[in-house]
Image: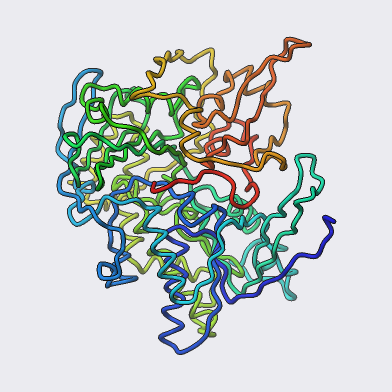
Length: 561
């Protein structure tokens, strides 16, 4: 039964991921085809159960790319309902909040507090009106390749033997935990395309394989990441100020750990609150989830939520490497776009606008390729086009901000002020990144962190949080969190680092249990709790955890995050 032939569907362009970049690319492709009077088959597949189900962002949204893509978005009813009316930037000590001047890059005049998930749902509707086919609940599990051409590819077209991407295949449904087909078995579908755009978001599982196969990151800095943990609250009317944007630095983090918070007041008495921590942190006892819960107890923060109720929870990783870490985007048969390519503007705390623009730029390049334009045939076509766009200059100017915080909070702030106000982003040097997973120190050298128990009113535990993320996975399926070497989970992670995966996972996936018969520790993986943040794939000190897609439709179902 598992040998059943897979169905095949053919398109001109397949887009993997229905986030801002993928949907922007699909829309732009159809706009170009309509303007040229040609037919173009465009398909978008999305691993979430619906468009927006896996989308999580702040978000204080900059509409620059949307203005270019759909100039009449206001008339079309785009869900940008709450203009930013005030920015506040606070430094927190344990009991005080000191207001600081808002850095220029963090000014939000002209921006909107939005649900990015709802914007993606709206963009999907716009795409479908143009004839884009969108298939949610279809998880791309495999990249399909044509055989190596003869003669071999030219220099710059990927490593010898890499071949050409010809599309993707979705995962088989109904495979049991033991790897055998069940009575639910349905084979995956092959989606064949002339060009395939990968818009998987941060740490895309297929993007990882493409980067390795084609050497896309050769010559650039390693990507660096953060984890963001977010809740959506309905607050009391007298605590609600639509359009208010607050960012904080300082407590509860120490001065050597990069991170901070956001509070964004939306419409309908809703407040989005979140905490972001750089994954280059050193202490294996640090828990991003617990730091977030502790943050909400600050005297300047807690009153916002008193008398309110928490209505949603989620988490995801963010790519923070910026300019230095942008890989080669093109490969034979496709390109990387959006956050899977690492286009977040860290000091601006925004990436949706750059993601959308990258999708538009890629669409224009791919459309020219399909039309036979020789100028677009070069392997670096999308990257060259991106370099000619405003995205490149924007990311170049801020390239030194994030790595400067290796100097600590105050050193990073001082350097950032110098780089912004004196050098204007044009310093004749570039600071560099290091891999996040190398940052942890052994547990024996680290101070333990004692976190307060949750009160169930303002602060909560992981399992009750996962419950309101609406996370669901078919339990009888192969685990989508794989250990490359199971022995390392105890021999290295447990013995040396006290199993930091217990703490950096925001969903309670990883748990050390004691075997009754032997009294020995064992790592238990509760994969059904996974909210698809991919932090484990990034932060594991031995890079021993491999996150792959589960069955399509699994994972969180965020309502309007």
